[in-house]
Image (cartoon, rainbow, N blue to C red; front, side):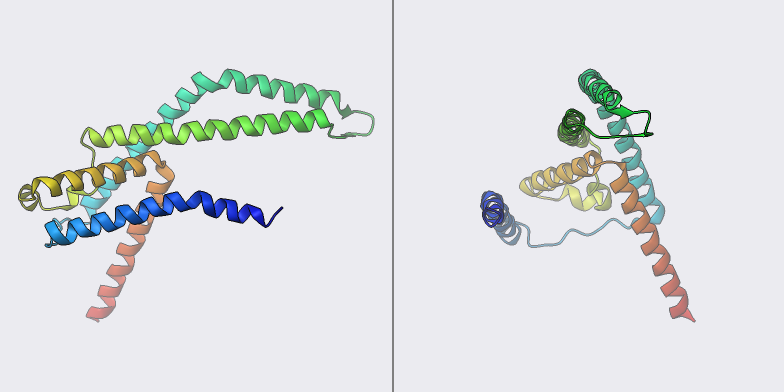
Length: 206
């Protein structure tokens, strides 16, 4: 019985892996045939990157709060009903005399129902946040384009511009929809890298 579970999971991943492989091969072929030259970076400095990352961080916070409000309006009433049911079962199973209580099967079921509902809410919240991130990115908030020389970007072929914009929109939407915690980790990693680089330069000069 247990041996069959890993096999099932592997089979479920096969279509996904095939799609990823096909998309990767197509992108590589397009890059080799149509875009043989690399794209030069814009000569940005540390403050430019921080401004970009902090801006994304703030937008991500706005998205998180928006999704939270939507989930409260949509799901809070049903959640509160489950919480009330759980509290009612806890009261039934209290043993005041002993100072402790036994968990009843009804209480276990009520706890399971609440946990399942919270998990279900998260499955709705993440795609909602991702969709909002994609929408905001499509409106003009980008991550990759600010790093590219604008004069060079204007010379891109139409197809390359379209693919670049699509990839930029997808990456930015994923960053924004993934939550402020992920962007905060990127900021910390960037600052740590900059500090290590500065330390290395100082030692090298000595």
